[in-house]
Length: 230
View: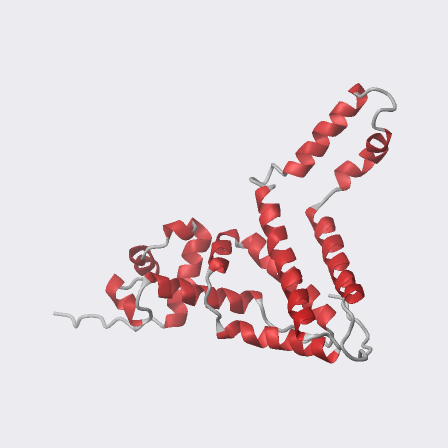
């Protein structure tokens, strides 16, 4: 008789990545310990060596996701870091929208603190108070996450983008409008087909960062730095 095959232990890292893959493919509601065990090819009970409950597994997944979303990008200015981070968050979550519900976890993963600390240091060096720095950081991250949610909501399928459908309907309706009633809408119709989420996001993000620069009064003389674009 042949010797029984000894299964190599599966690392916590591999289990959490497999859980994220499962959620990415099937949605958070589909995540069960049994399905995850099937995903990694291990007995369900063996997974509990890495976490004590499904809630702890979700916290580990959140920590792993934060590592992917928020990391310092090596910029020498807070503007560069906020802009680069916001763009990165949007790009990742548009590709992996089923990960969005994980961001409602209330734990504070250590994986996020390095990025936070880096941005707060840059803002403090530029003369911002801690309150102003925290509000600025939160504004940038809230904008990027909110924009992803809005874009997903208005893009239910690859061939249906709600704003573009609305613009198309409006353009078709323009010839039937009474002459002179909505002259500016009529004049703007050439821009309807050039509308894009990317352009709206770029404008909103640039405006937000410019607004932060203009609105917060430094608590001490600011250190002038050359701004790097993302």
